[in-house]
Image (cartoon, rainbow, N blue to C red):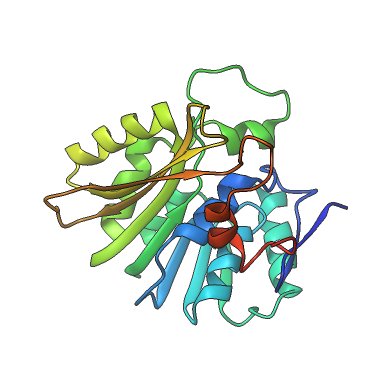
Length: 235
C-alpha cells in the first residue's frame, strides 16, 4: 500500500484511479479558503484535496467521485483522519450530483480530467480519471454555476493549453476567471500547469502570478516551500 504522510494526515492511493501528485497539493494549498463554510470537491480521487482543505478550515466538505474504488479509498482515508465529522463523499457522477442537490457552496474545487483526444490507458478507471469523456468542461461549468453561491469561488488546475480552452468556455457561460497562478517546473521550462480562480461576478482585472517549483540545481524554491510547508514533512 502506498501511504503518503503529510504533517497532519496520511493518504493511501493504491486503489484510487488518479494517483497523488503535485497538482493536487498545489490546488489544496493555493485555494483561498477564507469565508468558506460549505466546500465541494469535484472528482475527489483519494480525498487528498478535501483533507487539505479540512486542515485549513472548519468548513463542512463534500466530495463527488464516480470511480467506486477511488470513492472507497477516499472514505477510508478520511476515517483515518481527524475530520470524519466534516468530510462526506458521494459515489456518483458530478452531473447526477449537481442536478439533484439543493445545496449552494461557498467554495468549489476540482483537479479535473483533462485529456480529450489523447491515447487511452488500458486501465478503465484511470482512463475515466484522466480523460474528460464522462465529464466535459461544459458540464463542469454548467454544474458549478448551478450550485455556486453568488459570491462563491471556484478553483481548478489544468495544463496550460487546456486552461485557455476552459477559460474561453467558462466566459461563454458568464463564469469569469479572476486569478491565475502559472506554474513552471524550473525557470527555463515552459508553463506546466495553471491554477485558476473563477467567480460569477466579473472583475476589471485578472490577477496573474507565477510559481517556479525547483531551482536550477533541483532544490525546491522558497516560494514553493512557503506554499506547501503546512503539508509536506520535508518542509
